[in-house]
Length: 397
Image (cartoon, rainbow, N blue to C red; front, side, top):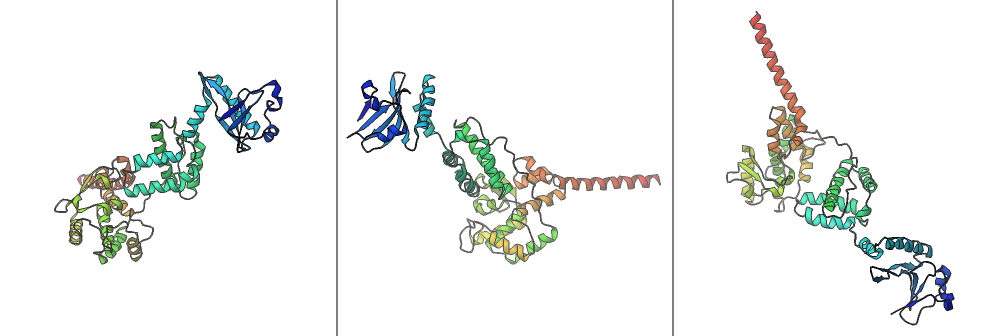
């Protein structure tokens, strides 16, 4: 029940300009609500309930329909702030806009957290477990704590820059990866018409230097000596498999024997385990075939099982032990992939072939090894030039 107290000359005590003093003097009605309107700003009122709750309202008509939205509660909202809001809304009404609808739209506007929920459902669910884990860590540890409650429409380029700078202070390269994920999600938001533009665009990323670490021939010898000493250990065999095929760690640990041909001489990586989400087929050297034959005697479904008899999730503990025993410093499992590419490039293998071995979908990814390939070409051309010089010298004699 609402009683609208209209302005009358006989009731000047209750129809004067709404002030803090007036609001404090209001007495709650026996039941329901009472609304007292300002005698200066049309439609601006203060509502008081039987329980003594007070709130500012605006009463207006638009397109033949009456509206009475709440501005805000008193004293959380001051009279000055409420009057200013009513003046702003009155301007919208004069333009034919409905401030109540705008308020509802504002309340329903998606936040960065809403973006994550939808992006996670539509984009991340179909990706590999390792990829999802990295993405979810960036969002839950960095993006959501900083910006989760922010409306997407209010998100600014400066917000994104600050997020990137905060992450850069901890890990510059990881900061770039986080922003790449955020940019992709925001592009999706544009597709969903949640955004007009992507506020990440134009953000300056941190400079990244490609990791050049690869094993020397002596380090390779020591590494394989240690792996040989651990033959039969699932993690050690997985590391050896990675070193001989140049595959990614996740590809090795997620593959099944059904991904190989019957003779174990060819490996067809299914799209579910490759970074590019495309099938990738490579022939296998004899040493890998023999390794897989031994592993199949242990289990004919999962090639690499841990000591618990379950499929391996990682090889970091055994890798650390092998690396220390072999006295190889500052090397990661992924560097084994760089090592095979470097070896192939230094022996004149074409970049196209190296890319095919590693499963690169874009040739520019393989071009990081171009300088090694060029060194090999220079050596071969010099050898040819020396031969020509020797031939011409002997003919002149």
